[in-house]
Amino acid sequence: MSAIVMAAGRVSAAAQRRVAGIVGRPLFWAAFVGLLAGLPMLRTIMTELPPPLPVLGTLPDFELLDEHGQPYGSKQLRGRVWVANFIFTRCPTICPAFTAKMGKIQHRARGLGQAFRLVSFTADPDYDTPEVLAAYARKHRASPRMWSFLTGPIDAVRKTVVDGMKVGMGRGGPESDFASIFHGTHFVLVDKDMQIRGYYDSSAADSVDRVLRDAGLLANRGE
Image (cartoon, rainbow, N blue to C red; front, side):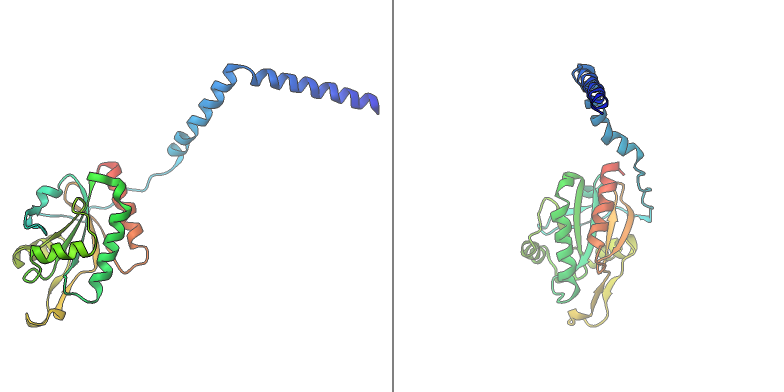
């Protein structure tokens, strides 16, 4: 039995010397480091990318006024990925929640930098002047570098929102009844070429996550 143990010890010691000899060679460590460096690339190659988002329409050129009273529209947005929503400042129901979700997108999309914008269109432009929208933007901590609030003549707003984005807005009662104002409650994702790439129900629990995922895909792919 002792002879077997001694033989096993000699084999083990020899194996350890061979391993030590291999590990001690610079070529081994160069190969090891190369393998570690190549793993992320291999994972990237093996990961199937999501298919491109569909093109659902193209927005015509438009120009409205932002919360600073400055012209703002397709000229400022072309070349950037952007997300639109639709609000009015007197709205006591859906608009505060809709705006809060835009705020979450603003916070989480900071890494996209200059490639990304948020745009809120008012459905009550007669009341929502630039000054009113500026106060609303401050109230909701909107970054002026990322998030703009647009107003203008009702026909111009309607042409962009209803005709261009295919999102409903209007008034179902007298002008004195602001509660009769209605508008769509979907986020609209637009690419750098002013093409509509997605609609997202703002009431869905995962709407913010889905908007951010798809906006990131467009920005990173240069679409």
